[in-house]
Image (spheres, each protein chain N blue to C red):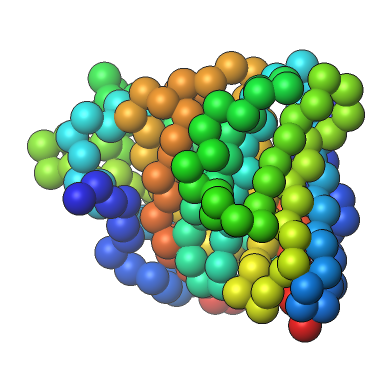
Length: 111
Length: 114
């Protein structure tokens, strides 16, 4: 079946360190991926996206890497800050309006 | 910068009552999506609507649930005769057009059924 999953349900990092959040997807037909951040009690917030014709995309302090060979997506957050504490979801899209969301990884930033 | 708005933010209902959730999309967006999220779980697609049309309701239970997006006014997700299992966060998202356009989410409505 198709699925979008995450390797680590909880990730704890020291403030100032870099964070890497991973996501595996099973459908090679997926051509668009998004990372969302969800803070407690709030809705998902778009962070960064990447299309399947790219391997890497950078934003402000965030980088998304896509490895189509092993169907793996990662989100790298540089110099992690307390405000980065949240649940991070990857979402997969196959050219339709239906996104498939992973269950999320909880990022905890330790002071 | 008016994003997706949802109200109420919190809704408490007793079993058997009706819950009505509202969503106003980003100005200019004509596509609305509703998702349900259980605690510690990912978002599950429920329904996709365009103005005055339901495009895909495959993720929405056939009974008790309905959705609309009228020509004027917000999109409404209605749950009749609520049961405890309906307790969840319901998120609305909007996009300017379908397909791979990014969906922008509202803050959600947290429904608690007593």
